[in-house]
Length: 118
Image (cartoon, rainbow, N blue to C red; front, side, top):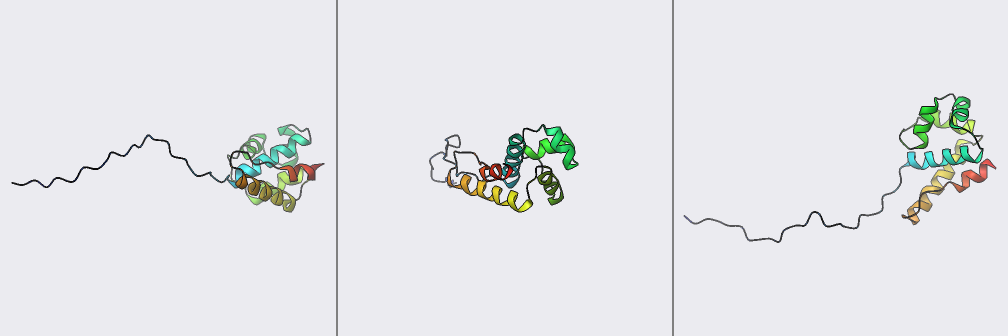
């Protein structure tokens, strides 16, 4: 009987590192960086801001670390506690995402929100 052998192909090296495309930061990460930056600019502890916003310190910490997908109500409460409007916060986050898109090696910053807090 004749066997049908498939032609030999070069082995694929799955361990070789390939340049991965730069990943766009997630909204929740940019939001968290902005919120933390604003809170630090005000010189506040997590518990102080959380109390004024009506959220637990643990929840605010998770928001700042980008672990939560907070509702618009939660975002509004924390923004209000930091004396920033939702519009200004949203614009600052959009700006930080845009700047992060242009420079994948640099982390997103929230300089526009910092200036709003001043």
